[in-house]
Amino acid sequence: MPKNISTPRQEMRPGLPFIRKRLAESGAGLAHLALDPSLAPEILRVAACLHRALARGNKVLIFGNGGSAAQAQHLAAELVNRFHRERKALAALALTTDSSCLTSIANDWDFRRVFSRQLEALGRPGDVAFAISTSGKSPNILAALKTARKLGLRRVALLGPGGGPARKLVEEAIRVPSPSVPRIQETHLVIAHLLAEILENELTAPKRRARNSRT
Image 1 (cartoon, rainbow, N blue to C red):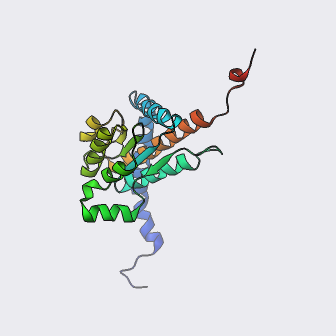
Image 2 (cartoon, rainbow, N blue to C red):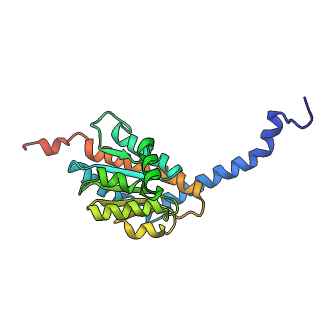
Image 3 (tube, rainbow, N blue to C red):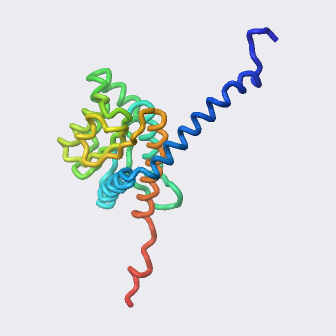
């Protein structure tokens, strides 16, 4: 074997401390999530906003860039299909999935309009515009939230520390207080799962016997 090509075993050993460090950081971030006194109430307020909209027959329109685009698609899939159990579908749509729509808007107009233009087409009063952004300052996110406000949509967001300019454009926000983008995104995923589970339980759980009892 040529001297400049290392074996897999040689490559793995120097990486173990690095991997352990990153896993510890991720675990610490999630532990902080459980202990932070502000995050749980923020999660419940966003869940309540989504619950009200879905219970009335409205829909949730979710959007973000890059890793947050993947988070948007993930959450939409959990709501439309299922999280833990068989139940009715919940109306959610990720505005990050239609490549023809995204590229035509970006090409004919501007990339800043890729989400706002879709909201103009699909959003109706009472729907929820759900932004996901680690920085809270992406131009297309801000443009979409301004459009949502103009159209009478409810506005919520998953954000990073402080929330950036997006915080002032939404009614409810969940802000993850971490300086690390990967840690924020990992926490956003956990929060998305929490929201999906809360909504599944609240909107599709069987009615309690006490409610149906005539005695």
